[in-house]
Length: 115
Image (cartoon, rainbow, N blue to C red; front, side):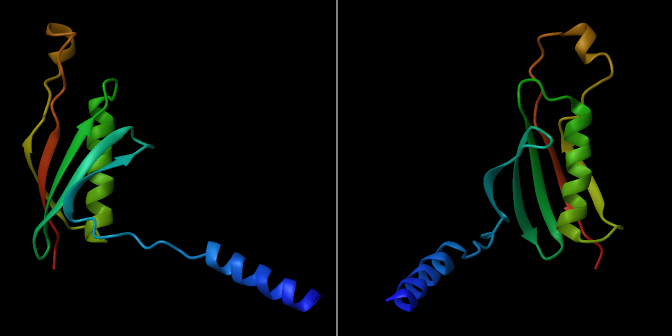
């Protein structure tokens, strides 16, 4: 009886310990990065080419957006030597002074990984 109980316990514990693999992350679904407090969308355009859109939360600084974009580009490509073509979202140094209630737009870029 004791061996049977132990066997049942092992089956239940092994069922709970399955590792969920990350699904396809290149399809443009919204995801969150809580370390940088940003939401982002990553889309694979072609082999070694990606589109990354970083969407800020209401109090996220521009420096957090750019830092996240650099780190995520490195994660996508797996090595240095990638190119980032910024399409939208660069803020001017005086934006906060001239428009304190300005809604920050998303930072969008195309990333090209070196082969």
